[in-house]
Image (tube, rainbow, N blue to C red; front, side, top):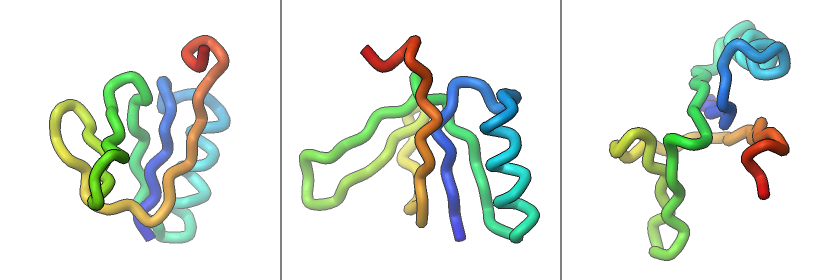
Length: 71
């Protein structure tokens, strides 16, 4: 399973624990900086872009978005 975790800091305890448990279960896990990605939901083919490159399809996306960036 491909899992993406949206988080500003991969070293935060909650983020690192999620990643650790996913990898323990042999899932492919990636931490994505929330402020460096954009989501295209206006087309028939929704996509996530990260640092200017389209991400391949993810099976799950776990948001870990703090109050400081969620106005």
